[in-house]
Every structure is written in structure tokens, then in C-alpha cells.
Image 1 (cartoon, each protein chain N blue to C red):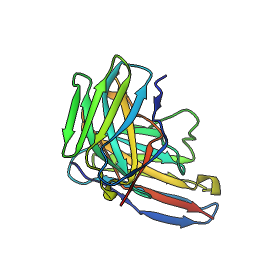
Image 2 (image 1 turned 180 degrees about the horizontal axis):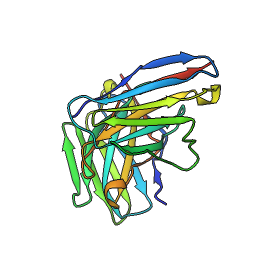
Image 3 (image 1 turned 90 degrees about the horizontal axis):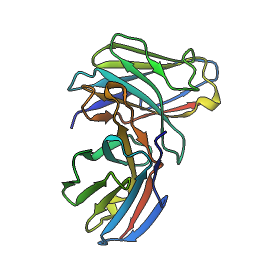
Image 4 (image 1 turned 180 degrees about the vertical axis):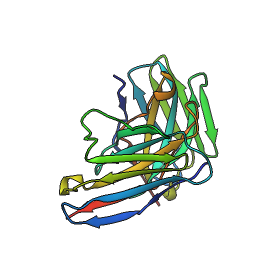
Length: 114
Length: 115
């Protein structure tokens, strides 16, 4: 059974700092991996999706990497801003065709201090 | 990205009543929709998967008679919480995807409070 772990559960950094959020998963037979952002009381916003054949994806100040062999992904946020404060969730989708389902980590709650 | 909406965004109901939550894919046809539940400070737990025109597949431990799911069209799925109890209070989030290989898009969630 796939397990997704995100440690630490919470992180507080000063504005402007570059930071890395970690995600690990137990089964490397994945189809893709997604990073999401969730603001309090809101739904999920997809940030980056990495297919299993890819090593990284970039969008603006965000860069996500994937190392399947070690079961790890990182989300790099450059020059953090207070508006980046949110919970960041990592989810993996296993191989398995049409019915494969996302498995989520518990998320990392990020607070960027002005 | 694609847009998924949910209605209502927030609902308060009395114990014993039923509540219906709608999930719509606004700019694409969703062959598959998913319903999740999220408790405070917890991750999303998949409740059920529904494909248009067929019965939903429920995850282990989810009562299908309590959480009725209907996926009548390629743009609409509904979740009905029947005879709701306070322990059903939670944040319910739906998700949709076009095809088996495409990305999942998530709705904004519905906060259900049962008094």
C-alpha cells in the first residue's frame, strides 16, 4: 500500500528565504506526482504535476523535482512571500490504468513571516 | 487549468436530515469524478470514485447507503449525505478528470456542519 509522508508538518520562514518542502513515498511504481496548495477552508489548487518519466517541472518561483528510485520529491519555492503561506500537499498516482487513485500526504503548513 | 465548482460552499443542517452537494466541471467533460473528505489538520481521504453512467465505487469503510453518489452526466456529480449526524461534519471536496490519463482538478470544497 502506497504511503506518502511529508515532514515537517509545519514550517515558518522569514520573507525572501528560499525553501524546500519534502515529500517521500514508499512505492516507486508511480504514474505521476502532483503538488497542491490549499488555503484555509478552501479546496486544492494544482501547482505542478510531474510525470513518472520526468525529473522536474517549473512554474514561476516553484520548481518540483522527482526521484522515483529513492521515492522522493521536493518542492522548491524561491524568494518566498507572505502570500505563499498555505498548506502544501503532495500526492502520488500509481500505475494501474483508469482506476488508479491519488494518495495524499498530510501536507506541510507553511508560514512566511513579513 | 480546468474549473470545478461545488455548491453549496457551506451548509448547516440538523441531525437526521439529508444534504445534497453538487460538483460540476465547468469547462470540460469529466469521465470520472471523485469525492473526498477532509478532517481538520488531516489529509484528504477518498470516499468514492464515480464514472459517468455507472455506479460509484466506494472505499473500504465508507457506507454507500449513507453517502449516495450520482454521476448522471459528464459535468455533474452529486453527493447526498443521508440522515446526517454530527460526526458527518467535515469538509467535502470533489475532483474531476477528463480521461484516465489526465490531471485531476479539485473543487473549492463544501463545509458541512451537522448540529
